[in-house]
Each structure stands twice: as structure tokens, then as C-alpha cells.
Amino acid sequence: MKKPIRAAIAGVHGHVPDYILTNAELEKIVDTTDEWITTRTGIQERRILKGDDQGSSVMGIKAVKGLLEKTDTDPQDIDLIICATITPDVLTPATGNIIAHAVGATHAFSYDLQAACSGFLYAMITGAQFIETGKYRKVVVVGVDKMSSIVDYTDRKTCILFGDGAGAILLAPNESDSGIMDSILRSDGAGEEHLHQKAGGSRRPPSHATIDAKEHYLYQNGQAVFKVAVLKMAEVVKEIMQRNCLSSDDIAFIVPHQANKRILTVVAQRAGVAMNKVMVNIDKLGNTTAATIPLCLWQYEAQLKPGDRLIFTTFGSGFTWGSAYVVWGP
Ligand SMILES: CC(C)(COP(=O)(O)OP(=O)(O)OC[C@H]1O[C@@H](n2cnc3c(N)ncnc32)[C@H](O)[C@@H]1OP(=O)(O)O)[C@@H](O)C(=O)NCCC(=O)NCCS
Image 1 (cartoon, protein in one colour):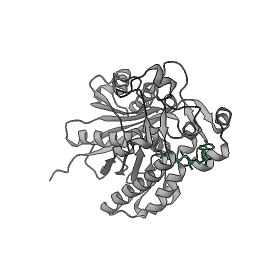
Image 2: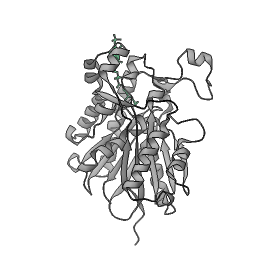
Image 3: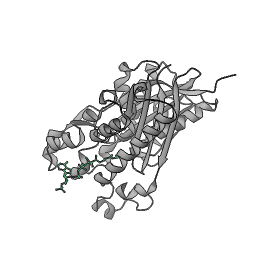
Image 4: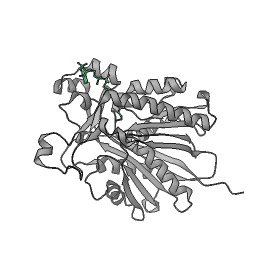
């Protein structure tokens, strides 16, 4: 009997801007210390996209171009580009359309998907469904955010957390035993009160009043989000491991969304996985929202072997969260 088509990760690439915003520089901007930031979050520095008229697509284009070159993929062979972002260049057209045009993916359709820090995971699972139908063969999923465009650099509780960046993967059909094996995706709109942007959309369109009230910046009740993030990420990691009969010894790496190093430590402990098996890039990149997971894969690529079992997990605004079980390899 013919095996069902499975989507596999056929390549990964990333891009981060050159400018490094260090904790020392933040000490000069807000009332904070390198010691507080490092011990409470694990972040030492983050990358910032500087310059006029530079949107998320600038980073997304570089990540996708690099991915196509690296995987020797003709842009015209791409069927679909899904761009996960909460910081699109503009509300319309989609940043995915802008990226597809710039990389020459003229036969692809493209769109944006918004699920904040879970955006990449949601987009990867969505892309995998297109492959599994058998109708689409090459799907690019790009997670990109220019968080510096929605962060209030007078609010010490949030400005220390975020950075800019982009990461992209190529999904392709695979009939062997590797690829995206299973996933759990969840959301709960009750989380809005703890993590949101008050204005800029249809409820409160941009006006002088919304700008004066700083309502276009990200608001976060850090402690409330922290507690739910730990609980939900640990819950879906355990659930996906159990239903795939995986013990901690079977796992090569947990690939978690990077919101706070302390969250990663607790999730790893609850899954019974040692910290040396947890991908971490928050120290050098901060929270890059939709880009954290593909940037982790890009950074750890050389350490991955075909057959390695990976557990992805995310938590973000919405609330949105989830996990995926992925076997690395061709
Ligand atoms: C944001 C976060 C780092 C804050 O850490 P925390 O330990 O919860 O800190 P709190 O918000 O309780 O603040 C503790 C104290 O530190 C202070 N503080 C906050 N930011 C500070 C900073 N950058 N420098 C120095 N002091 C700071 C607070 O004002 C507070 O002081 P007070 O007790 O005098 O009021 C943490 O809550 C977090 O990571 N939350 C989850 C983020 C997340 O998962 N997001 C989801 C995806 S984006």
C-alpha cells in the first residue's frame, strides 16, 4: 500500500540585522540593569533593523532568498509562501505577497498568517496540510517580525525583551519516515487582556489620540503571561510525547519559542529533558516572535542528524500555543 504523503523540512535559513542592541545600551535608555535583564530573562543582546522604510519584508526576503539558494530551488517551482508575522510591512498587501514578488516566486500564491509567537508553528502545520493533499510540492514558511516597530522604548518591562529577525523553511513531500509527524495547536482569546496592542486595527484606528496614548505599542502583563506560558507549553510537550510513545531519551532537542530563558528551563524540567537538549538563542537575539523557531533550527542545523526527533513548542499572544513532533532528515 502507498504510504501517505508527509511534509518534511527540506531546508532552513535565517537572517538577522547587523545592529546589536546590548543590555548596556538599554541601561542608558530605561531604568534597568544588565544584571536584572540577564537573570530575569537570559537576554544579553538583540538585533534591530535600523533605517527608514525598512519593514519586516526586508528580513523575510533575505531569509527566503538564502533558503532558495541553499536548497538549489528555482523560485518558479515554489507553490506557496506563508508568512507568519504580527509586524507586516503594511496592512495590505500581505508581507508574504511582497516577499514572493521580490524572490521571483511568480507561480506561488502567498499570504500572511497571524498567531504572534505561535505564528511560525501554525504556519508550518498549515503548510504541511497543503503538501499532504498531494497537490502542492514546495511550500516556503517564513517567520518574521520587526518587533522594534511596536515596542515602547520607554517601557522597561517590554523593551528589554524583543528583537528583530527572520527564519524560513522549505517544506517538501517525503515518503520516508521523517518529517512533521504530529502536532497540537491551541488558542484561547481570553488571553487578550494580558497581551495585546490596543490600537491600529479596526476597533481603534490610528488617530492623534491613540498615538498620544501610546496605544500602538505592545502591552504585556508579564507575570500573568509567564504563568500560563509555562503551564501550557509543558502540557502540550508532555501530551505530544505521550501520544507518540516518546521518552525524554528519544528526544534530540526541544525547540521552544524564546520568550524567557526561565520558561525554557521549567518546560525542559517538566519534560524531563536536560538543558543541553534545548535549543536556545534568546541570549543573543531576544524574543523575535514568529522567527524564534526557524532561527533556532538555522543556528543548530550543524548539530542535527537525519532521524533526530525534535519537539517544537510555542506560546504567544492570543493566547496561542502548541507543539509539533518532527523527525529531522531528508
Ligand atoms: C516580562 C518578564 C521578564 C518580567 O519578569 P518578572 O520576573 O515577571 O518581573 P515583574 O514584572 O514581576 O517585575 C518585578 C519587578 O521588576 C521590575 N522590573 C520590570 N522590568 C524591569 C527591568 N527591565 N529592569 C529592572 N526592573 C524591572 C518591575 O517594575 C517590578 O518592580 P516592583 O516589584 O518594584 O513593582 C516575565 O514576566 C516574562 O518573561 N513573562 C512572560 C513573557 C512571555 O512568555 N511572553 C509570551 C510570548 S511574547
